[in-house]
Length: 356
Image 1 (tube, rainbow, N blue to C red):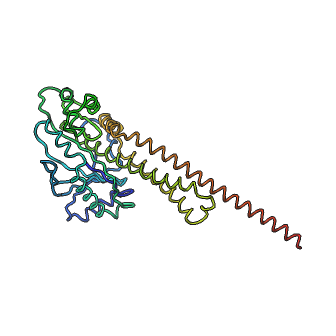
Image 2 (cartoon, rainbow, N blue to C red):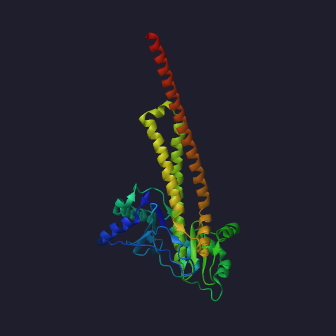
Image 3 (tube, rainbow, N blue to C red):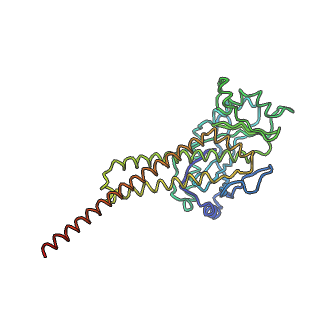
């Protein structure tokens, strides 16, 4: 799964209409509902539901395998698109580290997925606010299996005995790993029943079970969220650079058109960042489904999303503080000018009265 940012926001209803009108292009679009097979409240899921597009595409060669001829593109209302490829696998678990290594930052998949993201943006550009395909990309690999050849042994116990190979798969390493690295890579194992389990790491995850579509969708969203946090952090860095530069400008400069435009740019970046941050964090509601919430928390921790959140909140606060000081300085300068105007008017009245 590879995630891209294509704009500030996407009107998903409008995008669905545009794709439906171009049905001859081969893309099949539908609104996605977060699948779940366990008991959970009806109100949990996406707000709003993302748009999932199934597209016929050319297969991409990865090592000695190739992807299916069907690519899934998922568009989110906050301007992100996730492109998912499927590679059929069958055979011993010990053969998977080589595939994982080949998938790590794979150049062919990166180029092909960026082309798909760009073509989708061209199709739905009318439904995208501030359309632009950004250079950021986040990839994540999910190894899924319906079963393992472990007999009657619970999957958790099987994973415990195969921690070295599990660590090699999720870390995309074909060489031996230290005990510390193996422990760190396999410390997050979540299971709902004796027949399913999820091992989640920062680069990849392993999902075993019959109904794991919901867990995969949550991992996809976490990867998209990481992309948006990176984009937001970069945008705030640029906004802070602009704001810091503005603090060194003489107060009288803010009276001209360029100075006022600088203040408007800072305010616009601050508002856009705050809105995007809130939108991303409010898209997925997992309250009530404890299992999916555990999977999301584990993925967020591995991807350091809480750390990104804290950094963004801190930078938003810093930007707001700098902007407030610039506005205060401008207001003080304005009051000084008004005071001088009043003084000059009084002096003019006094001089005029003496002349009469």
